[in-house]
Image 1 (spheres, helix red, strand yellow):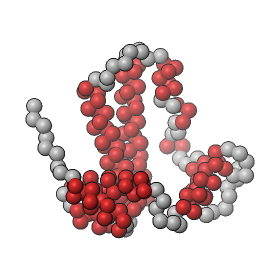
Image 2 (cartoon, rainbow, N blue to C red):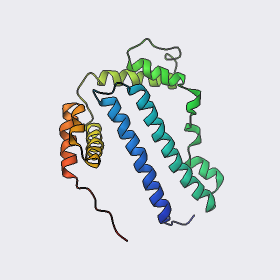
Image 3 (spheres, rainbow, N blue to C red):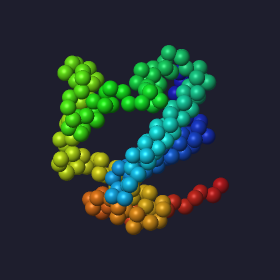
Image 4 (cartoon, one colour):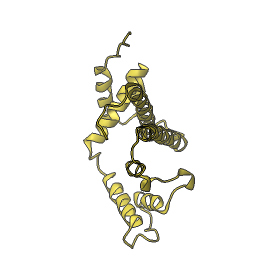
Length: 188
């Protein structure tokens, strides 16, 4: 297949969709990390599924383009990583419950003593729970949170909105927001 750039209208549509997905991800982080998130269960699930659906739209738009320009169907299926796909309508799987059990320090679920994904995810949950007892060990996570929250505060023009987050995130997000200027719209 020849190497051509993404058509401009498609590039803009992809950028818009990715922006929308990132905005939903920021809302997930906001509801998960805010001290005023009374309704975090409902809102984090709404926004996480909104983000997933939006990114699915991106993938399907690109897949439709690939199909239109004659990409081999088997190659396209490989690029879509269909073996990794899970249907939300099926609800949480045993692996998801094992991960949660590890995170919450609950008893080892059935199957966690045998090699496989249940064991792996239970162990991952245990390691993540142990890491959560220490200050945030990944500066890139704090930086990502600060950038997304700072951007949102700047776009809303409300820096006081940042006061609901932990102090280390608030301070960094304020610096991000204060350093951003609102972009001027291009005129054609």
